[in-house]
Length: 483
Ligand SMILES: [Fe+2]
Ligand SMILES: [Fe+2]
Image (tube, rainbow, N blue to C red; front, side, top):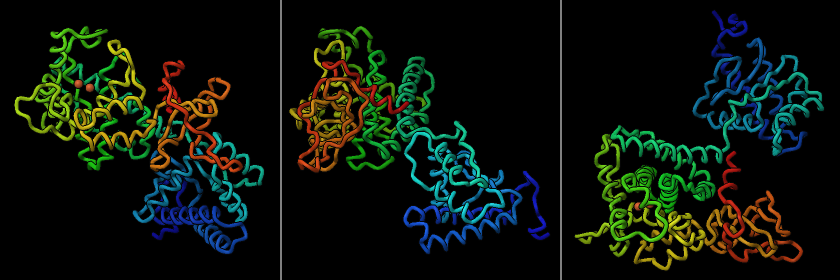
């Protein structure tokens, strides 16, 4: 039986020939889509490729009873059958999938009578970059305005929309807190811990970090006072993976480091809450109990039933994260030997997160840059110089999450640091208080922007300010992005 006699009725599986023609059509579609971004409509190359696209379409409509392309999960379906792209064509497929998603297009139907000109008009409308919040509606309107009637679109189902990276990063952050709570509870009951889940969480943290380090660092401004240890452990884990990445650790090492950081304070499960949350100074006895947590944590980790899956460094980190670079601190070492690299990394992140968090027993909560300067005073004695310097470089002079007063009278929230050394004092900031002192949901501005007339910087940081003095909740600004 020749393939031509295989004229399928609706819902009949798509033949290999149809598959091939459909893929050819999409590849040509992609080419025209790309050319349209570069050239005017009368361009020769564009005309030539449009002819070929129309030719592809004619072949396709001879072979298939209807032509529709549907976006579903990570695939493109042609007449209900999933298109299988070769490895060579995979980037094209990925590109189209993403562009369709961005425009919220779920289904594209092409009627057989469509003309070459109509097809070109449609590709042109589809190809335009969209920044509005209603890309799909805009495209449909333009199709109507330009008399494109034989190409119809349906909107992507809500369940098919991918969450924004910020949203999934924030979700991951809270999932990690929930997971750690479960781990702690299971540990108390001596139940099995799902270390695989922990590992997967840390791997996702790593993936997000590669995409958007600044946003993830911003999430560490979230401080949940009721569940301090849980929240703190997730923050330390995030910071440690980001720092380890800057120090050049491999992906596998970073997952181990993240895991170790995640469990660094596991021993605090055994510390009585009255001591953990005691306002004011601890007595000597109380302090001794508090200082048991490294030992207790290490012991717990050794006892884990899934011990084989846990990197040994996690035990080192639990044990050593309060030991200083000069080997003082606690637990006191009988033999003065070097501490593990991961412990030194976690030490820096642990200290930073702890002093930037408001606690009942601490009179002062440090702003993010005050914390860095305090830490730099103790470089070499408390913190490893290379690790601390890398941390300071990563955080910048005004770390993500800092509030800054600008010379315009506005208040900005640092959302991204400029990595160029000469622009360390010129991060990107979101304006949250205008020059009249009103709280606003302002734009994100780049402090390297120069006013073309005066040839001076438009805005400059005057000083860092403490969010508490202004009654501003920094974490809210990061969470809003994640909604
Ligand atoms: Fe600790
Ligand atoms: Fe800690």
